[in-house]
Image 1: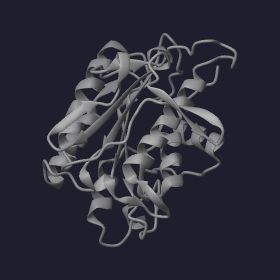
Image 2: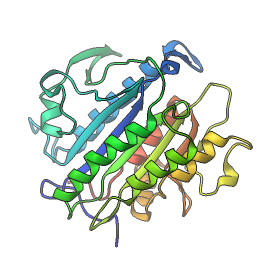
Image 3: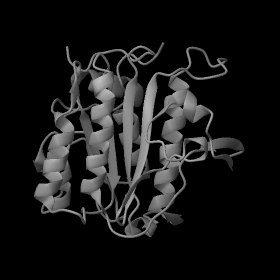
Length: 276
């Protein structure tokens, strides 16, 4: 059965986060005065990395998490597509969980608890989404070539606007190239999340384009380019997140509010059998 390979040190998983860092990400988050989209996105991605890291310990007392995943965090803005990892990992595209554990930039106090930070907020310029898909494809292709027994890579693209380096057909083409990459366990999974302007209704994991807001061509584009959520991932997402996903549900959330973004990242990183 495809998409059923367990995650361990011999068959690790790969997750690539693509973060829109264009100028519009400086706009405030609806319902959260004083918080920009860029700040919210960095905050939630940091929490997601920490969550994945917790999965990589058999017991919570283990001093170092195990190498069950390789992660990339890529920002795209202006004419740039770059790795957002810093410190000892500066310039490195993919990093193992132990490497990330040893390369926390800083901790910030939140609700009296220290929270690790790997990604800092940033936003400027236009939105080179096609170039970001191209770079994600290079990374995923190289990783898959060396991990054919593993679950295929997962790419999660989080954006608030249309690509500025290509039209809709170009985005479809680059997304199709991404989804064509594969391991023996299945094709690469591409998830997309469009951030809310605070005025639109969110749509979570639609199975049909009829569920999308009428006339929203951007939502339709991201829906069309998103992978279907595999049955095994749907089962695990339902178990861990208490959400029912219909057969054929796409890995797409339209007009995501903060809670929707958290859910999208939880579902998108819910690989099978990752509790050891």
